[in-house]
Length: 78
Image (cartoon, rainbow, N blue to C red; front, top):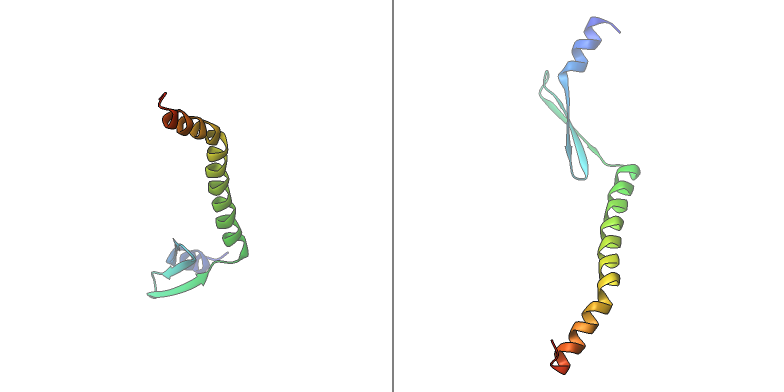
């Protein structure tokens, strides 16, 4: 790699946004927008699936307790 290539690489700055990345060339002042591809959207979907799984697991663990509390309140014992 020559010195010119190294200097050109220092001109580029990557800025990540949700759904796309912006590549700023600070030497020329241009901005290039690169949309996310399948791997990035797959990662977002996977993280969303993890959140939904945690919420459903919490509900699954606490549902019997909630039924018990509701029954006890209805019977006046709680």
